[in-house]
Length: 454
Ligand SMILES: Cc1cc2nc3c(=O)[nH]c(=O)nc-3n(C[C@H](O)[C@H](O)[C@H](O)COP(=O)(O)OP(=O)(O)OC[C@H]3O[C@@H](n4cnc5c(N)ncnc54)[C@H](O)[C@@H]3O)c2cc1C
Image (cartoon, rainbow, N blue to C red; front, side, top):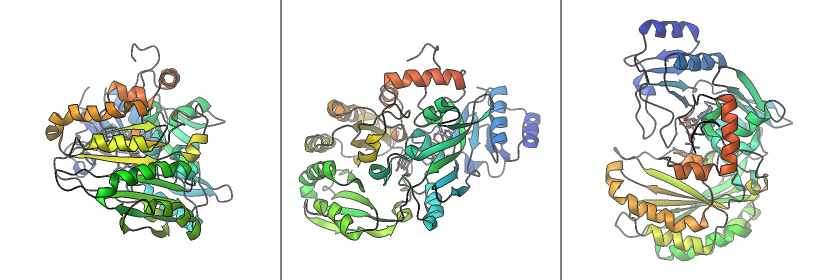
């Protein structure tokens, strides 16, 4: 890759796009290079302002042999949305949120908007749909990957709400993808990540949600095993309005911390919310109960600040059966690593009713996502990697599939888990049609069919 771009070419680029162009040394460049835990040093950053800017940026990158990173909210756990010596298409100014048809609940979202902005804009209309649970995550990356949030059991993944999208492809075409137009591309961008182009806007059908009952319930540490098992069993029969996440904090060699279960009941009926949540409260000794009614947007939380030098190793797997036995296995294995944070997100319900082949997110039997985060620095964690692998091996018999959003290091086994063979083949054929040269490869990458991979 060529990181030396002729200044006269940069001057031309500046004249050709309506957005701002940054190169190293420019005022403002340094604020645009890094992600939460990843540093970058791109040769060129374009703060795009239109589809045409995106198309010109792609062409410029191809002319100069620059790798392309697509950046919406910049929360890539794998660091894909920045690079060293390449070009970053930063979509943060494409952040318009517009209710285009109130009666049909159709909403258009700029890919660069953040989920707290989406929630705030929809709240006055009494609308919401599944988003990420973190305020600053971007619309773009989450929607093309999946989108597991507090309304997942009631309304499915974020991408299940998608009706249409505008996509700029590797050859600079600006296409609409929907069930009617380019349906194959529409299938692929719902789960295929950034493989197929740059999505600049999304049209979604939102849901009539304004109030939720949300908060954390914490349990006495000595009861963690019994509560977690009971919770796993409860979620099997809980109403779909209830989505819940168990947060099993690491000990760091100290006394065990309380088990925290975050709950979100989608709806404003207090009696129904308590009927769904009370069985969880009764599982053990509650040491803290923060559940209260609030607008949906308030359930979204800011990302935690990480200590300097930390770059957590993140992996997840999906399970079709969230059982008491699995809960026990998870806790037993977690005990071998004192810096392993484990999060279990219940995500059955509506997600299970979408036909398996309807989108490129095929894991439609999933009941829960298990995420294991090795906290600390890469150097500090290096000696712990065999134990981390052992954790996942122990869970493997209960797991099927993975979610692309919560992966920090993409191993071949991760790609295989995200895209089972049949799905990968279909994606690879479409990749060949839309991006035969694999211009968009900073993602959980799908090689164009015909290439000698996978
Ligand atoms: C703190 C934190 C909290 C999170 N919480 C959740 C959560 O609750 N639920 C959940 O499902 N996920 C969650 N995630 C994972 C998240 O969904 C992914 O990291 C997602 O890619 C982030 O979107 P972004 O726009 O911020 O990403 P970016 O870093 O901007 O982009 C990541 C990648 O997505 C692709 N991409 C981004 N924008 C576009 C676009 N416009 N068109 C095409 N491809 C694009 C590109 O491949 C890009 O490299 C979280 C991640 C973090 C770091």
